[in-house]
Length: 350
Image 1 (cartoon, rainbow, N blue to C red):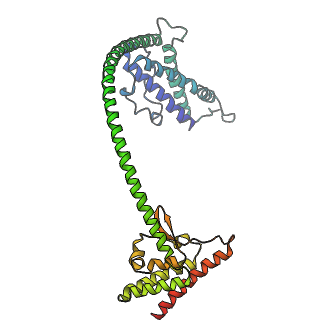
Image 2: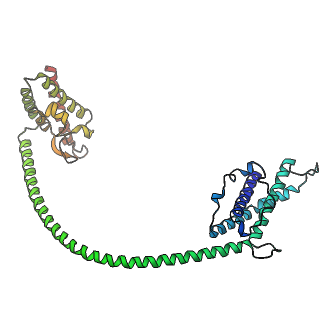
Image 3: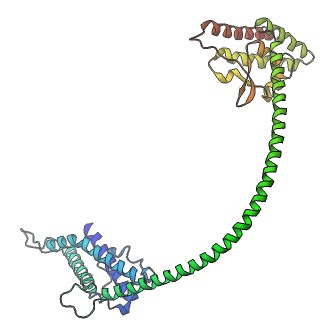
């Protein structure tokens, strides 16, 4: 596995170097001495997909690629030395090379390929002892410097152009600001007049809503006060309900059963808050019970109070704290059970 990985890395390095040399043939990159395309077919996996489109054109990027190739070879160095040392080892018993024939061939080929591309990069960077003339890397660096200078000049020219445009835009902007300032003052004055008018209308509406809310709350208080609380009140309102529905036996039966369901659920699970809350606008409740005289009043007589659920007016049976007020809780629960008993009596009679 280690040999295969190193083969792949060496071939990828050679492939990139060769593509650089082909793309930039006038930059004096020395050719690879070994022109075979691979050590093994497996080693080319990942390198065969490269093409000329992946090779950079600008000198600065080429310089970075060359440095990367040299760094990659440096990292592979210890593995190469290890393979080199092992290629000379002999089996102490058979006297044969430690590697088998096929592996030995691959290792020797790998060492040749590595040495080949390493020599080329040494020559490119001018690190070979017997070199003559300017190394290729210096030519690349010179071109990179020229590229950098051209880039700086271009940036300076662009900066000067931006400054000229900035001054022109600033002058135009100041003119627009003066015009906008005038329009803004006029707009603010108009908005202030509109704001004052909205505030006046809002205050009038608020007062109307407040008076309507106060009237509704007072009507609710008067309505609650008119209902007798406790078992007698439940019986009174239940009689009113029966009287109101006497001409519609089906509606009467639905109302009684609905009330039975409500109080049966509460007495079965008094700790369940949802059983003790009914929205005043609850469509099913109003259809079955609330639309009849005495229907909502039975709830009030049985201890329900008016409250709010998500800002919606509702009938709520508030459970006293059993730990702090045992007598209050007992009275509350007894009234609920008595209400259920009264309803069940009617169910039995019907």
